[in-house]
Image (tube, rainbow, N blue to C red; front, side, top):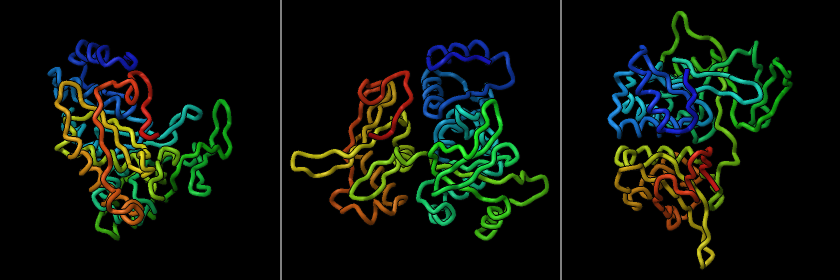
Length: 314
C-alpha cells in the first residue's frame, strides 16, 4: 500500500516503479481525482491495461457512463467487478458497498431513466449499495438517512443529512424481474439495499427547478466532450445587468487538450437536463434553458484550485 497524497506526479512515479512487480493495481480515492490520475497517465503513455487496474471509490456519486469511460481508459473490462464504490463517513467508517448485484441493477436502471424515477422517486441516479443491518442499522426519516451502529463511539439514529432510501432485497429483485431483468440465482448476496443521492445543499434552484450536479456530470461524459474536459465543473445561477437569471456552467479544460466549443457544451447540458430533469423541462422557460458555458484552464484558482476537495455548485 502506498499513500502518496494528491500529487499526481508522485502517484504516477509510484505506479511506474511498483506496478510491474505486482499482479494488479488498485487505485483508491475520490472519483474525480482518480480520473485525473488515469487521464494524466494516458497522456504520458502509461499502459494501464498491463497493470490489471481496479478502482476503490468513495465520496461522490458517479454515473455509469463515468464507470464505462474509466473502464475504457484503464483497461477494465468487467464493470460489475472491476470498480466498487463505498458509502461511509469519517464518523463510522464503511456503511455499505457496491456488489456485482447492485452494480448490475444500477446499470440496468441507468439506461432506463423513467424506471429509475419510478423506483427512486427522483430523476437522479443514486449510488446503490448493500449493507449488513446487524452492523449498521439504517432508517429513512423524511427522505434522509439515519443509521445506528456500534463502534468506538456508539452512534444512535445518527443523521448526516444524506438524501436516500431503503429497499429490501426481495422487493428490488421482484421490481427488476417485473421489468425484464432477472437477477435471482443461487449464491446471491441477499443483504438489503440503501440508495444515496448525497446532500441537497449541492443543488441550485433555477426558475423553481432543482438543478443537480449529477445531471451535468452525465452531459460532460458525452464522447465528443469527455476527452477535452477533466469532468470537474461548477454550476451557479447568475444575475445579468437587466436582473435576468441565467444558468452558468464553468468547466475545466483537460491538460494538453484543445478546449471544447462552449456552445457544444451548452447544447449537451441543455439536452441532458431536458431528458433527465423533469422540473427543468417543465418550469424553466424555453428561452432560458441553454446555459452560459465558460471553459477555464486546468487548476484555475477561482474555480478549480489544486489540492482541495472540489465543490460542484455555488
